[in-house]
Amino acid sequence: MTSTQSDLAGLSRFIFRAPSWYTSLGFALLVAAMAGIGAFDSGDLAGSWRGIFFLGRDAWEGIFFIGIPTVVAAFGTTGVDRFVGGKLTHNRSSLLALAGEVIIVTFLTGAAIVSVFTGLGQTFIFDALVVALASVFAFRLLIVMAVSRSSLLIAAVPASIQTLTSAALLFVYSGTLRFFEVGGPILDAYLMPYLARPDRAPPELSAIALSHFQLLAITCVMYALGVYVFLRIVDRPWRRGLGVSVLDFIRGFIGHIAEGTRELEDFFEQLGQEAIVPVTVLSFEREDGTEKARFVLPMIHPGPMGEIGGGNFPERVARRAEGLVFPPHATAGHDFNLVTEREVDVVLDAADDAYERIEYSSDVTESVRVQSGDAKMLGQRFGDDALLVSTYAPQFADDVEYAVGLSASAEARTTGLHDVLLVDAHNCNNGLQGPDLGHVTPGSKRSFDMITAAGLAGEELSASPSGSLSLGTAFDPTDWTTREGIGPLGIRVAATTIGDQTTAYVLIDGNNMEPGLRDRIVEGLTTGPEARADVAEVMTTDTHIVNTVEAENQVGAAIDADELRETIERLVDDALADTEPVVAGMATERAEVTIFGNDRTETLASHANVVVSMGGALAIALILAAMAVSLLVFFLA
Image 1 (spheres, rainbow, N blue to C red):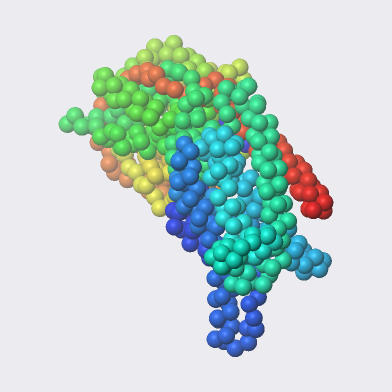
Image 2 (image 1 turned 30 degrees about the vertical axis):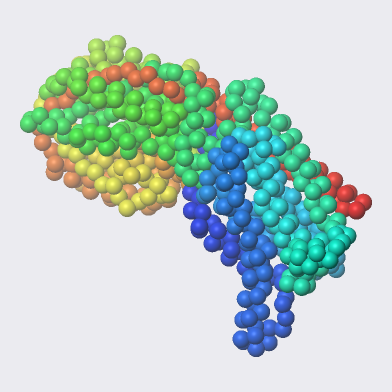
């Protein structure tokens, strides 16, 4: 990926799974209780039982005045939003209400601290509460407009629930109604006890005046206009450059982080372009006709992140075959991300079709290793077809462009090979550092190094003698997790033996490797008195399921390198012990899929980065401007 795309990938650090609605509400009530204890002082706390009573009373008042609006918003927002055609779920509403409560508590805490050191008094705290309630309304308005794609006026209805509920409670329990001349004994007798209850509220609420509610209304209008201006400014380049709205992206992103929905895929599908990708399958069959192992390589990129699009393709394909499946990384970058998980089924169907057309052969050569510039190529011929594995280690490299891979495969076929399964080992990178992150692009020196190496490997394989093939496999899902850079497929090993030569293919379900780790593993397998293979290569699947925590989560960054090497050596021993005679065959099918498309990833990354950087600055500027106007209104009032 490019540095711009790495910034987009960095958004994965915001990905999490929101708790269920009852968990969010439970936490909200706990926060409200703690805020009540800190905000209200009901009396003397001397004596254990008396102290516990007053603490409980303070906690209840916090729950009533801060927690109740949160609960009402959590349940009411979904119903009202759905009634006006929105899409908010209970989990999202609860999380949104909790976020609003945190904003209120933060404002009140900050105002209380300022009041203590400046002596501004209780009125200042309630002035800050007005700003907090208006800020909650603006924040909820932004989210509701993004998630439900409603207009400003319609979105304002569900967005105002938390602010209106808080204002209503404060209006009743501060006795503000007594500022009005309602008149009449009937109204005084029947309505006032319910609409004006200052005697049942903490004495601090007596500082609330009618002007606070007037200021709240004015401030909410100003903040709503600020949200509208912000969205129009941020949305303009998206519509001009991509033809989509930034609100669609925000809605999909929120849906993904909150509930794991596929709304982000719907957004990507709007950007997608049709493409034809080769899907190559190399299968190994036992003498009894059962499949022992299968390499599956579609020329797609398993991204963009998490399980979105083709992010979890390696695990999906591993569940599809009879034998042990090896899904290494193809020569394709982020432009060839599948836009939806549905596209994975198209690729898997093409892989099944290719498998059905395979013609097996016992004509297999020993493996060869060639080098051109920085590019190293490991190759092995199976009949008229070949498996090629490319690496730039110990030099740093990331994705290889689709066009470079096609050219390298074509160069290898000029030597007489039919089908070529070209793997990008994806096994040495220095993380998200530098201007291009090792991206192998058409026209670069590295691209010609790979193309030349593929031709050299094809020439050597065409002239190499053949022999009977034996294959052993082993795998371990390991105890490492995606947080530690290892996906659900763990580590898989295939060991081929032709004559006196043994070649070990090691596949790790991860996204690239720490610098130098690949070389230490290969050296441990092929050198010294305990050498297990004559030739070895380590590959990663480039699964992006490990990038739901952070964009940079390479193999070896979070786990012990020696422990990893020992695990691989044990698995190679197991594979050698599992060796048995097999025949091999390869076939290629073409699949028509929808991918991100040429330059669309770069454009999306650029626009998303602008939203994060300039959008944040613009938001701060608008907030400061709204705050300044609010202060002016407060002073004038």
